[in-house]
Length: 164
Ligand code: THU
Image (cartoon, rainbow, N blue to C red):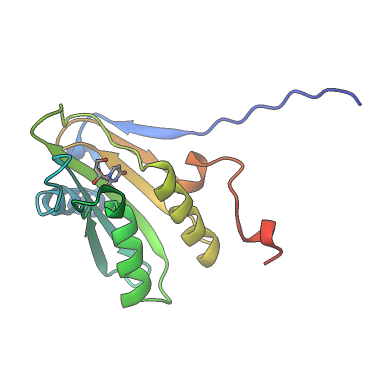
């Protein structure tokens, strides 16, 4: 069989800081930063906050929740998704801002969701057939804007693989 070469790329926008965002996005990111400060992360000291605007314009937050039994900890993004799916099971997410604060590492660089959260975000996108726009940032500095969470997880495993 003939060999074929494929490649995949994705576009994202980089803003120098939050002041270049529109007002709605800026307030969402500020809320994510504020939410990070309330995270329960005594073991890693890495405090993550996520804030989503829903299709009905409501705003939902999540922060990471750690545990002395480390694997039990849950990332901010999945805390948020579980909250959204419980509070407003019929609403899709339009945009999610994610930020973090740490005393131990430089917090001025954007954070991207971990692999498990990427999978959870893609499930949510597929469920509502709507992309989730992402705003990724640290406690200050650049903001990355991605049009969809799925670009972070090419070749994702999904319901179609299960015939659903
Ligand atoms: N964490 C998140 O909450 N979201 C991410 O996207 C990356 C990692 C949390 C998990 C753990 O509580 C801490 O950050 C350090 O990994």
